[in-house]
Image (cartoon, rainbow, N blue to C red; front, side):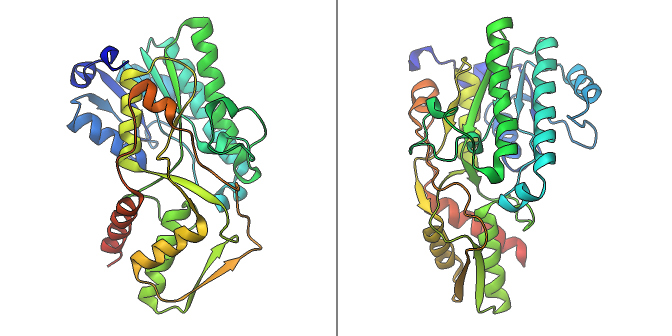
Length: 320
C-alpha cells in the first residue's frame, strides 16, 4: 500500500489549495502544516469577505483562488449548549456552506475536494468502537443531530458526485478536537476548553466549587489538533475514495475521569458539583481507526496527557 503513496513534498508542489475555516482552530494548524512542511500555495477565504452561505461569494472565491484542492473545514460548531440553543442555524449554515461549495468546486474543475464531517453524525447508540459501516444505522444524539446531519449530507453529496461525475471528493470523520488555540468561549466551547477555563479561573478566584454538566458517565475520544491536521493532509495526498474515514486517537476517557485529570493538571482544590439536570450527550464515543491507518497511514502521535498539559499551559499563559 505504502509504495503507491505519493511523495508528500512533490504532491503539494505548485498546488493551489483553498482551506475554508483556515483561520480557525483546526484550519490554522492545517494551513501552517501546508505552508511550512509542504510548501503549498494556500488561500484562506475569510468570512467577512466570502460568506460561504452565499452562492455568489462561493463562485467569486473559487474564481479568484483557482484552487487545485479544496479542504472544507469551515463550520458553525459548538458544545451541547450551543447546539441546543441554535439548532436551526447549525443545520442551515453548515448545510448551505457545504452543499454549495462542493457543487461549485466540481463546476470550477477543482481536482480534489476534502470534506470534513463530524463524529456527531454517528447514531446515538452506535456500537463501540464506531465503525464507518455503522454510520447510517440510527439517528444521531438529539442535542447535536441538526449539526451532525447537515455535515453528513456532504458524504451523500461526495458519493453522488463521484458516481455521476467522477468527481474526486473524500469525507473524513474526526472525533472531538482539543489543543492550544481552542475556543474557550463558555457559550460555544466544547468540553475540554470549558473544563480548563472553569478550573483555572476557579483556582485564580478562590472558588470553592465548580459545576459540571451531566453525571460524568459518558465517554469521549479526543484528538490533538496537530494530529488532526496531519491526518487531513495525509488523506488529501493519499486517499481517493468516497467511503467515509474516521480520524481519531483510539483513546477513550469518561467525563468524570477527564474532570479529575484537568483538576490535577490545573491544581484546582475545590469541589466538583455535577448538575444532573443538564444533558449528558451521547453515552459513548470511540472510533475504529483502522481504515485511516490502512488507507493513508495515519495514526495519532500525541498522548492525551501531553496534549492536555500543553492546552492547559497555553490557556494559563493567556489568562495573565
